[in-house]
Length: 501
Image (cartoon, rainbow, N blue to C red):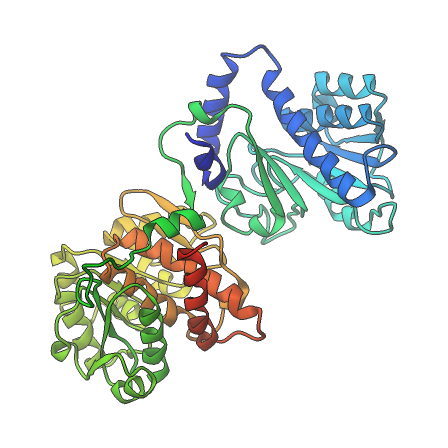
């Protein structure tokens, strides 16, 4: 695995454990923990230096569980004590504390305390690592609940550093264990993770608890098996995928995208979908639908007709937002699915797909050979899959992708893109500002434009979600965000992304 893979891809616990065993077989005993502790201590020292000017005299508290995670914290605490920090360890499972780490801490004049102190400048969360499952034990949960009451020398809250993963979250899913009951989880300012990312650091409720994430290279890369469980998009990747015209291009070679969205009741969905499509790389936008008048007024360059059958040739369709679920909508969806080009379906089109009374839709889906991308939010996902996404959103999306033989773009704070072949991506540019009416219409139009320009469905979904997220951030810089502002922000965002000089 390359260094770039390590910082943008995530592996599940079983694969990390396998890589650790293979690496440890080649190293002297204790080397792996020493590498992890050194990286943890370095990042902790940087935090103390940034906030307090240095390590010397700072108060550091170690929350130490049983096993190797607690050992990492103890060894890191010993290194900080060696630099003059006052280090106290709270052993949550004294009989299972890492003996070597505890000896190292005591040798460096670190102390073992009986309870959580009132004062600390830095807290190392070494309660539970990637092997943790279920709710934190009672004493650990009590300590986590008490953390907000601890104060630092400047009377603020101490910096909290999670060791490998915030305690209380599931490494493979990102779910906060016990979130529906009395479970607790540590909220970290920084998570120092070892060897590679874990899914919980890219997706799920845990993302908001991890803070800034730093990967410490301990040599796992060559031993990580197979493809990762999850990949994260980067600006460099999306920029390299983005279609660009060349000297031989004309509007047709660049791709023609068809937009079959909106209705007399929801003309805005059509206007926003065309806006998203127009900002993308396709050379022409054809609109077909009952909102023809609104689209003509808002987007003069679009070629407008009132039915899919009259739209003319396209290289991809985006269909569904504001389409409705009446017979006219069903007819338009059938026409889109009958076309031999890639299709992106959203909103009402997904409702119609899930409706078993919609004649002919299932047969058209089975007969299709061109790519299909579906972009559900959780409610639409539930209608398509027969139930809502579970705690493991990645596995949920992959299950639907396999069932539908389609790329699934499962919207959320961390949007997941799942391929039928089992590969999954997560978008890290999302923002709560995107949770506004019409935002998905813009995204659908952009994905459709990328399909028309020739990108495979999964790349169109990943790149579209990434740029859409950036546009949400850009729009938020100027005040309250609406879908109109998101659409307007696509062009400056794309200009910066595709012309970085």
